[in-house]
Image (cartoon, rainbow, N blue to C red; front, side, top):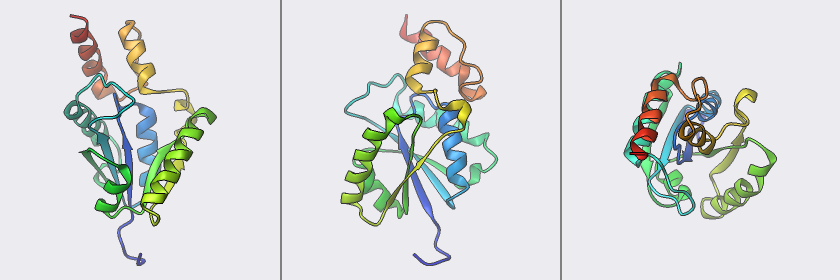
Length: 171
């Protein structure tokens, strides 16, 4: 890659819903790469999502718009293998978040598989800000389903959308 080439990082996930921890990783990635492509997975084999893919993309776009370097971030949806998408985009790296040691084994295996399929694309592990290390989308959904307060844990612009979604699920 030449010195003036645009360094693109791919940050894939389900983001169901986006949390301040996710945004912390986006901000860190923007400090390293020229462009960060946040890729919202349409489907996953292991997760049932609360929000549709289009809703998750919309929530992420709303959240990203509030960031100081929003112009360096693009939000898309995708299906298929992350390594293939990274190659399509011309990404030099796949960004993955690590919150705790418990995340490491799964992420390490995934990074090795991605390296096998796209040997020239590095996986970069980033940690969110310390204040978000414990935070997960699953935890957010559970708290909201039990009428707990998630303000300050997710972007302010999407708190009501999460509450509304949970209310519509219980009807």
